[in-house]
Amino acid sequence: MIIDCHGHYTTAPRALNDYRARQVALLDEPGAPALSPDVRISDDEIRDSLEPHQIATQRLRGVDMTIFSPMAGAMAHHVGNAVTSRHWAQACNDLIHRVTRLYPREFAGVCQLPQSPRSGMAECVAELERCVNGMGFVGCNINPDPSDGYWTDPPMTDRYWYPLYEKMVELDVPGMVHVSCSCNPNFHHTGAHYLNGDTAAFMQFVLSDLFRDFPTLRFVIPHGGGAVPYHWGRYRGLALQLGRPPMEDLLRNVFFDTCVYHQPGIDLLLKVIPADNVLFASEIFGAVKGVDPETGFPFDDTRRYVDAVQGVSDAERHLLFERNARRVYPRLDALLRAQGR
Ligand SMILES: [Zn+2]
Image 1 (cartoon, rainbow, N blue to C red):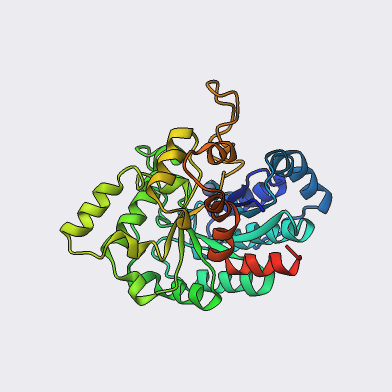
Image 2 (tube, rainbow, N blue to C red; image 1 turned 90 degrees about the vertical axis):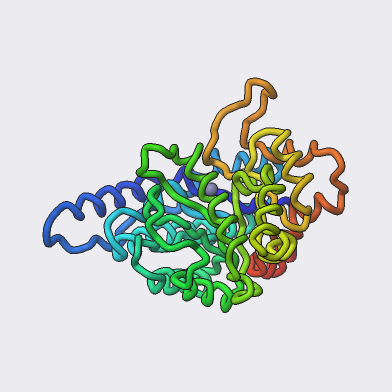
């Protein structure tokens, strides 16, 4: 099987964004009550939004299953307050749930969390439980910077986050470290903020004893791990210098995906990071659309790069494409087994 562990519903029907616009508009009206989700979308609209886009591309590239979550750039956790984020996350996650009901063999759900700056984890814990126990989701996306570009919340390794991690461990679901939009004009969202977020989270893990407290907690760092594989020597050196455990210890809990959009980048990723710790992903339709004029193929067609890497055995490719995803997302494995796959 080929499992893509990182896809977003960026082609969701317009009614979802219409709801968001109405929800946000009400924030400017003093005394107006919060607008609970009232999104009305038919099954056919969902099919039409996926068949010619995500599903057609998956089939073309031979991807059997995508771990699918709401559009990351639209999470916008800085907007409004905790109630705003709760309603918006519910609306987005309910729609992902409907996708997984309509296409159970093509999609497994990962939820958006109702994070809000300095608002604690109670809302996130409740939504994670609702999505995993109530709707069969297999993981969550965690935004390390709910302020969307200003990094005002504590590091991901702070005890502030522990209630969420306790619930993730209890439910045995991993989290993908995934920022949202950037309100800071210094950081382009997908070109800088995303990669900064990946890199920043990794260094936080290097510096902390988080995984001593949560030995089974698992994170996937997307976009090939930001700058991490390229600067692996720097992290190893810093760990030595700072008296931290070796990198190998972190690799029990931290995984990387293959959302890197050129061959040399994927070559490097797979040369530096053990095959046990890399999960196939392409992030369609997401950060970079369009065709690379140098190759004639879409930038985000990461399967081509993974297929073309030299020095990776068939057994290792099987890990990258299937086994690792089933191991890191045990609920996905259970779901696939129930389908006889
Ligand atoms: Zn993404």
